[in-house]
Amino acid sequence: MKLAEVTWPDVEGADPDVALLPTGSTEQHGPHAPLSTDTIAAEAVAAAGAEAYDGSTVVAPPIPVGIAEEHRHFPGTMWVSEDTFRAYVREAAASLAHHGVDRIVLVNGHGGNVAALREVAGQLSRDGTAYTVPFTWFDAVDAPDMGHAGPVETSMVRHVAPDLVQEDRIGEAVAGASDGWGEWVSGVNLAFDSAAFSDSGVVGDPSGADAERGEALLDAAASALATLLEAIVARDPPEDLER
Image 1 (cartoon, one colour):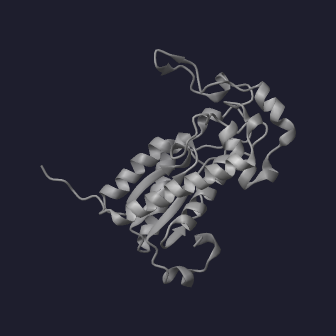
Image 2 (image 1 turned 180 degrees about the vertical axis):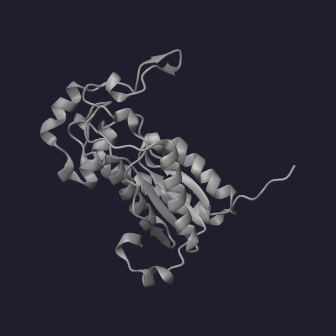
Image 3 (image 1 turned 135 degrees about the vertical axis):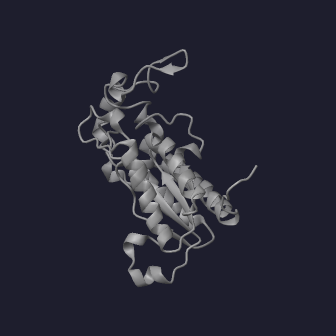
């Protein structure tokens, strides 16, 4: 059940096993992919994972603006502070718990959100609001060439929302791309912003991306998410530990 598409009486008697809250970003993804790439992916994975799960779920509307100041040099990018993002996710999740949901999975599509989501999930779980865990889709699939707006994300968008890919700009994306994320010395990334190492905002080569791979990625992420949903529903929530 997609929360945004039903009425309150539909929700009143639903009693889902678990709620899914997608989190994404509105940020540059090169000259070829939409600013909403991370949100599109998070929504698609949440919906597909809910469908693959053999149980009752509710999928909340996505949180579309995240921690993305590292992309601020590229027009259209939006971001909020880590404190604001953590508070928004925490309170959005708590509103689901208010209606009786006691298991929540934060389905994430943006790397910049990862640390904050882990912290929020821990807080919600420890204080008894709801047993909450974060799930970042690209960490759950075989995607060693992830990059940024590279072959992985571009494949996903080509599958889920092909009309939003600017195919005539792929060459521009490749020409201005970098091979890796940042400038590393002694295990330290010296670059805080993507513009410091990528002229087009892209990391990796999106020219080889295709919808078929995007479909396979979505299927793999959905399967992994369904497995997680089964585990969190079966597992007892965290309790205060004594020593």
